[in-house]
Each structure stands twice: as structure tokens, then as C-alpha cells.
Length: 328
Ligand code: ATP
Ligand code: LTN
Image 1 (tube, rainbow, N blue to C red):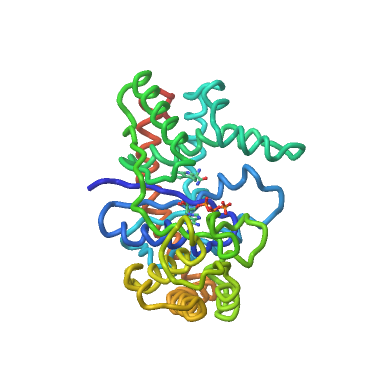
Image 2: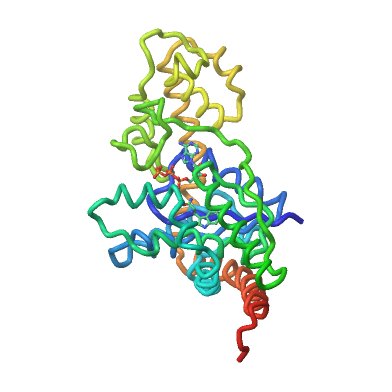
């Protein structure tokens, strides 16, 4: 069966865009392929300076992943730092990639420029080597990623190919695949930009843990236009089209059917809010249940860590043997 791996960083709260655009597809995908999903806390260290923040975000993200329906008995859901082989193989990967190759990574150039006077860790620079380890440790055939991560998959392929040619066939060379298209959710206040946790205000971003009142308020205030005609037109009517897209994704009704059903913005907004609230209700309930039962959450993560380690340790040993490190 095809092995798929995709990871997520525990930074910031999960929002509707992450869910409808990506995470919901992870849930559907777990029954189609052999999937591994890591919460990559060590990657988050590249920009962390405060104690406890990463651990708490990791726990919360884990509860959210289980709450949306990832089944630890079907998918392998693990925390990166619970599988020490990531750091171990990460070093080997660092020694298999060149300074020049890492210097060409767009994400590093952008992130380090944005941090300007801030601390730019060496980890931010070597990050793609750790990501390469994340991927090859699991013999992943496919890595579904957005455009921003394609360069990191390319460098992973280059590293794997270089290692295999130096030390003999050891790693599966992964392919970047375009994830199943999810909904593209736009900011409710600025519908030409994608919904994002880093936008200026929170009022255009619906978080998975927002309470019903907050969700209603955000939809009520959603930016539309002055035409007062409900129609799907991404270019001319981005706000209304976004509401139709969200309502469609949350209710399962096709956009075309919905567009015919509404003639005013008010009902469209309140129905979109209600559909989102009903969709999130069971997820939030399960999330809080898990957060209140940390022992269960720890048990679920241990199941994932055990399965992940079994695979990861076999690959690490294979790599050490290929290099010919002295065994102990
Ligand atoms: P930031 O808010 O800092 O830009 P983000 O919220 O976009 O981050 P990422 O960690 O970059 O989150 O993305 C996680 C996943 O969610 C990715 O697969 C990304 O494509 C998807 N995603 C993020 N925002 C949206 C959105 N508005 N619509 C659809 N998919 C999205
Ligand atoms: N760099 C990715 C997160 C990430 C990842 C991975 C994705 C770390 N390791 C392995 C896919 C496969 C990001 O910032 N979104």
C-alpha cells in the first residue's frame, strides 16, 4: 500500500482554513493509504524562545487531530520528539546536504529576512535536513504538500539520491504530490486573502475552538459587496463566493444549488454560521473531552509513537549500517 507522510507544526491555533483546506482530507485519506502524520515539535524549536509553549501547543494540536476524526488505530499520529530517530537521522541528513543547497531555500531566505534583528537560529537554516529525515525515516512514497513546501521535498529527494549513491540503496526517494483539493477559505474581513492565523485581526479568521457566539459575530460582520445579489463569482464577488464555499463545505450542498436558494446576504451569512457551528460542535466536544482526559491523550500518542518508532528505528539502523558506522 502506498505510504503517505505529512506533518504539521504545533504553532498557532487551528482554523477553518486549515481544517477545510487540509486536515479534513487527512481524515478521508487515512482509509485509502497507509498514512503517517507527525506533529513536528522539533521544527517549531527553530523559532521558540519561551518555555512550555511548544509542549502545550503540541498537546492541543494532538487533541484536535483526534477530535476531527483521525483514528490512531488506522493512521499513525505521532509527536516528532517522541521518536528520537528524527534527530539522529537529521544529523546524517545535515552531512548529506551542502551549505550551498540550504542557502538556496526560499523559505529560509524569507523567514530569516523577516526576522531581521531577531535571533536567526542555525536550526532555521538546517531545517530542511530535519524535514528530509522526517520523510525518509518512514519510507514515504508520497508527501502531500502545498506549493510553499515543494522545494523542501525536492531537496529531500536530492539528499536521498545522494545518500543512496554514496552508501548504497537505503532510502525510498519520495515524490511531492498535490493534496486532494480542499476548499480554499478566504478571510471573512478581506476575502481576497486566504484565511490565516497571521492576518491583522482575528475577526476574519474562524478558529476551530471559537464558541458559537463568536462564530455568529464573525459571519454577521463578513465583508460582502453592495450589489445585494447572491451569485458565485470569485473575481467580482469574493466575499459572497467565500460564504457560499464555506456553507457548501460545511453542509455538503453544492455551491450552485446554494446560490439559487438565497436572494439576500443576511440569511446566507446566518446559515453559513449555523452550518459551521453544527460542523464544529462534535469536534469541539471531543476536543474538550480529550483535553480533560490527559491520560487518554497520552495513551493515544503512545500508540502512535510506538508504531512510528518501530519503522523509524529500522530505517535508522539501515542507514547506519549502509554508512558502516561501528556497531555497538
Ligand atoms: P499562517 O496563518 O501562518 O499563514 P496557515 O494558517 O496558513 O499559517 P499552515 O501551517 O501554513 O497554516 O498550513 C497548514 C495547512 O492548512 C496547509 O496544508 C495549508 O495549505 C492549509 N491552509 C491554511 N490556510 C488555508 C486556507 N485559508 N484555505 C485552505 N487551506 C488552508
Ligand atoms: N515544513 C513543513 C512541516 C513539515 C513537513 C515535514 C511536511 C515538517 N516535516 C515532513 C511534510 C513532511 C511546514 O512548515 N509546513
